[in-house]
Length: 362
Image (cartoon, rainbow, N blue to C red; front, side, top):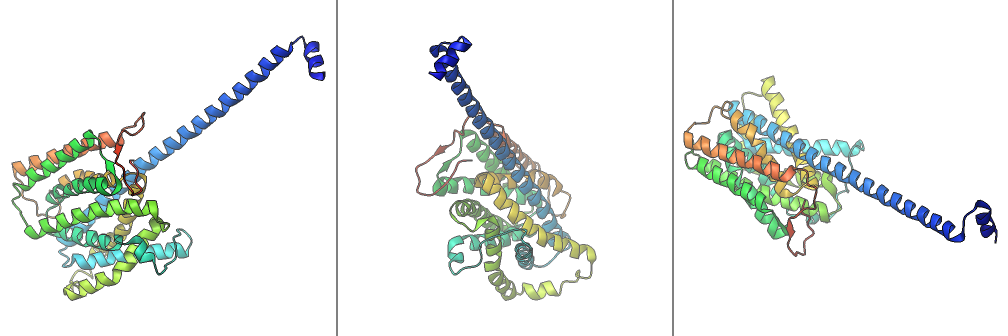
């Protein structure tokens, strides 16, 4: 009665009043919908920049540690890549241990089943580090960079098998271009070193496995990225020390004549600390992107490493066929960068195969 009276007093019929109320409700719903869309768009932009930022961070860290490692192992002729890998493990343990004590970072405490939860990552992590340093010492940087492209193909195949991620046709073309360029470069490598080639191919397999299993453990384990970094280093420190001692590298490293040289000591410590930075950036890039993206970003930094490596280390032997192959691989890397990181307006068109493993195409 009061509503009708109010309506009559204002000159509005009941039908008109209902229409106004309905219009107000529709306006409120539209406003709420627009708010959700704006919030979702903001989250998408934030995630996009996290993807790009983590990839750039990993690329810079990978570039810097490659150059520093090459300087320590080749320019200064440090005798043991095993001892250097031991220093990198120790740096990760100390930095993350202090970070947790100072409450800068946090991760789950050590438990009886911690090793089982993250297995086989510690073994893969140690093998990747050791053989990677061995390959860096044995090969020129341009050839090391070219051969590292094989890890991309291995990662792509492992992602398909374990995570159920099928890359797009454009991604596959760029990957095959990189591999073809690397094979062409290797066919005319005038500084051929069989041991170095073996080390790099083992590292490629370890890199592929590391990227895929890091992605899997980050998705399924509550340990987190800092926990993975800390426990990978902690569990492998003693085995790495035993291997270094058993091979005689411990004595050779302690007796090295450059320990009194402050420039060498600074770069050795930088290499150790950059080992931690590289581990962190690798996990961060894998978390926000895919294992394949992390692997190829690591190879993209080799665009700089490839050309810089012709002047540092002093072990690159130029030939036209080798140079052409290296450049084909570099251009294919640039193609992958364009395909992967361009801003997409439509949902990802990568096909996810049915799998029992939790995986995501990103």
